Amino acid sequence: MTYFIDRRANAKHKSAVNRQRFLDRYRTHIKRSVEEAVNRRSITDMERGEKVSIPARDISEPVFQHGPGGERTIVAPGNKEFVEGDRLRRPGGGGGGGAGEGGASNQGEGMDEFAFSLTREEFLDFVFDGLELPHLERKQLKDLDEVRPVRAGISRDGVPARINIVRSMREAHARRIAMRAPIRRALREAQEALDAEERKDAVLRNPTRIAELKAEIERLEKRLEAVPFIDTYDLRYNNLTNQPQPSNKAVMFCIMDVSGSMTQAHKDIAKRFFLLLYLFLERNYEKVELVFVRHHTAAKEVDEEEFFYSRETGGTIVSSALTLVDEIIADRYPAGQWNLYVAQASDGDNWDDDSTTCRDLLLKSLMPRLQYFTYVEITPHAHQALWEEYETVAARFPSRFAMRQIVEGNDIYPVFRELFRRREEA
Image (tube, rainbow, N blue to C red; front, side, top):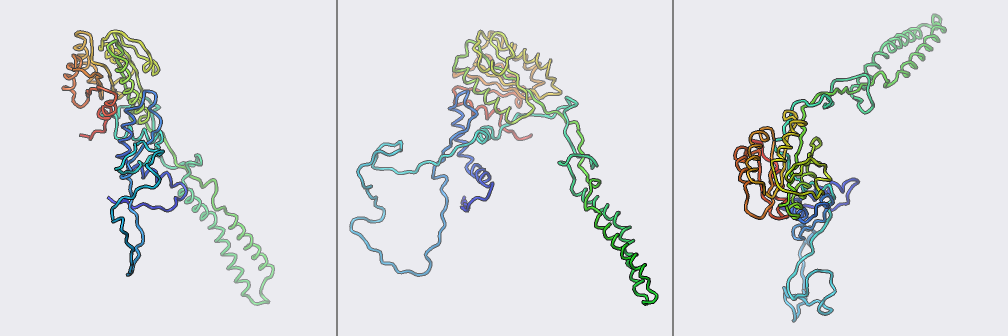
């Protein structure tokens, strides 16, 4: 592919457009750098921008110039020491003192990478590009105040921002025709009478009548000029009415295992996963509520601060979290009015026989109401009983139940993209 680059000076407000074209052109390279940045960032350092480097060979541009043209005869002097392709030794000794990271060498060549900075908004755009909440549906009316303004004809009253210029000018034109028509008719009759009077013989001509007609014509002409081009009576405004809209509200339940079997490294991975999810929902959706649930032997609904930074720990009973989610849904989020999502992170360790309880809760109560359930198991070891029971649920709901394993921090972002990638509609 060949790119033609316009090197003329930018007009006013053009730099933002050119920057966007640059980001679109090198999207593949930038996304690769963004993925690397996400994997190496800490929990509290996800929202800033990023410095991105692109290999110089990938941004090389063709150079066009005028050829010499015509016929030329050149006598080029030769030499006895060098031939074409020889390398010239750099004068001044063996080097050193440079700013590069490489050591001294007698071979190899290259070019520095092209580096530039992404803003916070651009960085997050690349992080969440191509992601969405699966199976998001428009539900029935939830609140009477959930409305959208729609056009509903023309009104005589309104605010200047809603003025309909075309209709206002049409009304002004009609008013001018209606107001000026009788004046023009009277003016035409006065001019005809004046012409008839002036065509009479000098003996029969009536000077007083002529003066009266001229005064009348002048008065009528002034009345024509006094008709305004547009009047407040002519103004028309676009009328808007509030129309009830189906609700596409959603709620995301974030369930994190904080039991004793979850090491600090496991918890950090879980927090980074949920932080990515939190940023994704806050940035891409306006009507998504988040409910944070932490559990060990008992589950508790917490706020954002406690979810990410509390140090509470204990044993492990996963069903306590699923039971609490089921109760919250029944109490606050009816399935007919909300899109329900659950994201769970755990190391897979669970109390004996509780994994079967989790499976039954999902199959009988939760999954028939949920849009999507994601389970992330953070462990480098073999899967345990909870994963095996969840496989039964995934087999029953293949499109709405997803399971992935995370071994180390570098797996977080690829797994997150896989779980929430945009899917083709069936």
